[in-house]
Image (cartoon, rainbow, N blue to C red; front, side, top):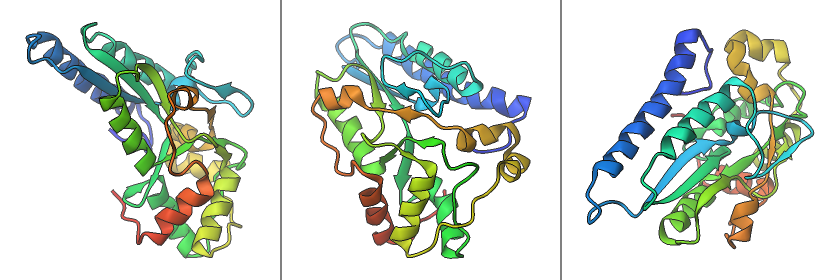
Length: 237
């Protein structure tokens, strides 16, 4: 269940269950499989929503969980994944905002910039912890093949930015201005409580990935956006 929508009590329930229930089924299947055919590794992908939100705090893999709704979802999601048999190598990737040409966050932003109406949401001061989709795929691949990848790994680029900078860089990549901010009240009118995901950010660093020697193809948002914009039109999901 997508989280970028207006949250009602039923939607919030479905957001959580759609993640926890599927993970539960996967874990139960692995645990019931005989050891000779059991998968050797489980990669469970949750989200940096685990850490909550902050304009000042910096989060890494050792940081504690937040106290908002999305942090609660991630905690229950991860708790279920951790029930996998101890003989299975377990990797938990907390994914940031994925940038790619086939949808996601940019699919909602680029049309506005095309109409010269792009700009940051809310104050623009909120942190934007992102990762290029190619780097995320490569990180998952490394986690599959490399036995030194274990435990929690933040799936984010090493250089998070404020949302205003991200919008400025997107405008430059597209040859469009980033001059029309969308005020908080307008976002809240559309998304209600769900506006939290765009109006409140967090600065998350991939300390574990760097310790493991993972090499980012796109460590800076400027290069990531130029690659995505130059690769062709962006399709919405």
